[in-house]
Amino acid sequence: MATRDVLRAAKAFVEQGWTQGVSARDAEGYPVGATYASATQFCVVGALERATMGDPLGYRRACDAQMYMRIALEERTHIDSPSVSNYNDKANRTKAEILSLFDEAILVAEKDGADK
Image (cartoon, rainbow, N blue to C red; front, side, top):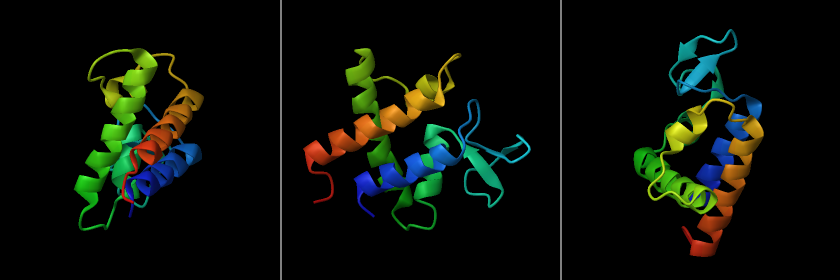
């Protein structure tokens, strides 16, 4: 799976449901692992984990995708080496802001020629 495809898949999981403070939650709001079948809400990192579930190179692909998220976040915030998790979990952060960050990261990955 190409890095930009990982980003698109992870974005789709966040579109279904987004959370803060944990990798994933079930339909009742309880914390669960991002790879659990009951997970219905995901933070950025949990969504990347879920998107690469079952891929033998999943960890590497999730790390590559997170690198593009950090680059997009750095462009957005002008902070060197920003934390994607901290950005996701910041009070008053919105799902729309997270989805927009995914879009920006996908564009960065495409410009970079990721996985061509």
